[in-house]
Amino acid sequence: MNTYKKTLKKKPIIIAGPCAAESEEQIEIAIREGKQRKIDFLRVNLWKPRTKPGFDGLGEKGIPLLVKVAKADINPALEVIIPEHAEMVMNAVLPMLRKDGRLLLWIGSRNQNHLIQKEIARIASRDQRVYLLVKNQPWVSEEHWEGIIGHVLSGGIRKVNLINCHRGFMPNGHNPLGLRNVPDFTMAMKIKEKTKVPILFDPSHTGGIVENVLKMAQEAAKYAFDGIMVEVHHNPKVALTDAKQQLTWKQFDKLLKPNLN
Ligand code: PEP
Ligand code: MN
Image 1 (cartoon, rainbow, N blue to C red):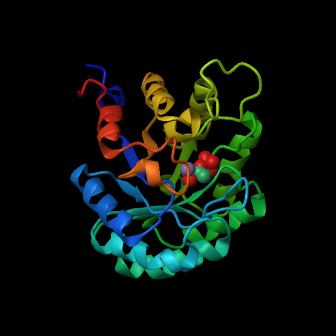
Image 2 (cartoon, rainbow, N blue to C red):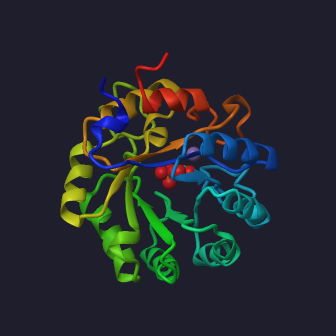
Image 3 (cartoon, rainbow, N blue to C red):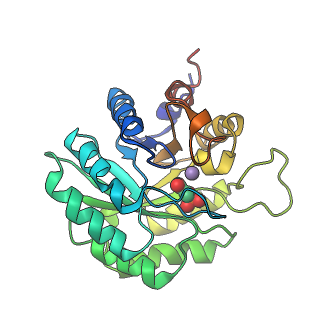
């Protein structure tokens, strides 16, 4: 059986949960589902970069949800867009972490100001319980992607606290499956080899629709990724963002073990 888990050499890092935190009820369900599956980090995303104006996250008023997650003994993960977000979240969450608890902050694909990247890394590096994840930029450039790693390292984050993530590149030409973003697995493996930073795969933002999310995860399982970041919602139909690509928790189980019925 060629499961996602078995293809990976070490224990993979699993990050899952909704695209955006929307309500207390949604996060309570996500805590329960995430804990059952012993995921490493639960997405509790408060600030959403959007293409057009719309729901762009609960923002600062969602911070109590992060605290709730940390108190429930599951590690929260979220995107921070500006250094103030990192500061605010660390101040609220770190004192509430349970024994061996961790906090994961990430820099999203569209956030390509290297001064901001470096400053977020500097703040994250203050506490060893904080992991920093960086996603590749939207356009195709190996040099730029490697540069992101360079910038955050120069901000002081230690390599053991750093995780890279491939979420594909904006389509430009050949895209027979109609992917939202087209992965370059060869480039991702090259960056892993060069930087020695573990790399995850994000099938959600490559796939764009459930069918392609599952396909992309299977494809990625042929490569030496160190884990995955997946969007999962208890009721994707009513999700306020990325409704078409969010999996149900049942579909997520199938993604991890494709032979499940
Ligand atoms: C996300 O993971 O919530 C996200 C917005 O992804 P990306 O930065 O890869 O577009
Ligand atoms: Mn999303």
